[in-house]
Length: 353
Image (cartoon, rainbow, N blue to C red):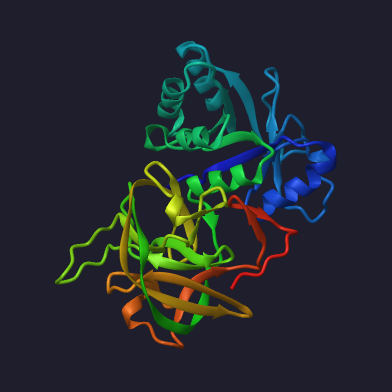
């Protein structure tokens, strides 16, 4: 049985911003923070805490304490400098600790590998500390098992978003968009995004001419009698189109390059990160496709070819060459906001056509 991975955010904000920041964390799907529970003043908040306090859900004990607390999970912090410390952690865990917090300095990977190998068959959860989102991802993948939780101190919601995507725990609300217009617009430059990952049926990238309205453009894992499958590729759209990055910012397709990170979603809205291996910009005949969700209208200019597919509301794929007015495809839409170098500016007026 796979253990649930916990991203534990340690808010790096002042008292005046704390409640607002915690609410933002909850909205992004964070369920536990490293903070004194007395600082959570919003009675509607369901967020859990880990802290040296009996009022926390995860209680960090001092070195002398070891007694169970009813309805709580108990654990201790350990500094690891040698294998002797790892043996001490193992013996302490066997005595009934629900979790251990591991602090390592210069050597990080090998000590944690040894601890995971030692503890993975008992109930004790292994938590550690990370300095950035890249390190969080690395901690969760050690020995292909990973630690059970990572404590990450940050004041950036974008960093939290990126980290959740890296963990595959970020969810987007994909909705049914009704096609209202399709027309040829002549030749243009389109971008093929070749990722360094194998993409599965139902997965693709969010692409659109507007930052607040993007279509789920499917990967090329479906072959035909005329083409071989390219399951790492998304024939994304015209150079001007936006796509979402794992940190929540947008990028023009023309800006993507080897080593960039992109957001990959499945038809249920579950997101993950993929690195780009190569991007190709080539001149091709193009189609303008417009669709509507509620009062929001969005569009995309995509290559006019059978291999470019959208995902229908029932999960089936449909080529852009077979799309008809009235068809429904999956898209992501929200209220329009301004963007400054890809970053959302919530109070700025914007009208896109």
